[in-house]
Image 1 (tube, protein in one colour):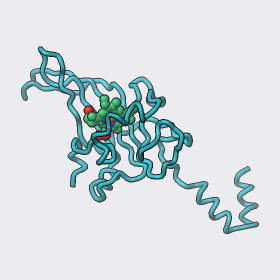
Image 2 (image 1 turned 90 degrees about the horizontal axis):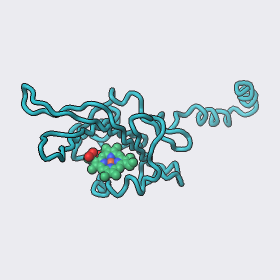
Image 3 (image 1 turned 30 degrees about the vertical axis):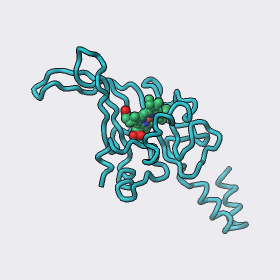
Image 4 (image 1 turned 90 degrees about the vertical axis):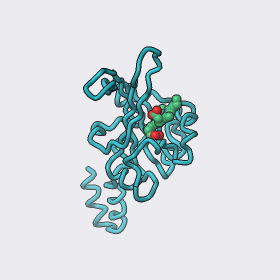
Length: 186
Ligand code: HEC
């Protein structure tokens, strides 16, 4: 039906159709965001650029090492854009994967290593303020946390309460803790 309607319009008003066609076939804002602003965890982020990791020290008195790791990924083009401009481009996706860890004595010493996934924190750059009124979007980003058992539905209800206060120390760096990401340095 659409094709027929389009053909008719083409005959009637070629210029108008050119515009309509462009907007119709335009790339969606992000493959990980639907039209309402719902965010999902990218399937293939482990093939992206791994930009850095945070080791969470154990708080058990009789143990050493890390009890978890936070591994952070962006797409290669995002890392390249950040290195050249110092900014995250519109649509940039930052994935922080939460992993459990184990610590063993190995031939290299006392070593902690990542085991299972616990969940994902996602931020998606939005320079245009697209989702006004959606409590997951604001301050230039979409914000969402996912538990490991559901990549499609966030457990975050309101980024201003659930995310923002803890990111205030990184506000001057567009809310991102850039000091932990060697791969974003020039
Ligand atoms: C308890 C404080 C705290 C809360 C709550 C929190 N964050 Fe963070 N976040 C941090 C810190 C600190 C880092 C960097 C160090 C780390 O991972 O431990 C970080 C890192 C991140 C990163 C990796 C990029 C970066 O900023 O360095 C993402 C993505 C992220 N957080 C998203 C979120 C989202 C989305 C929420 C809300 C659902 C959220 N965070 C809530 C403290 C927090």
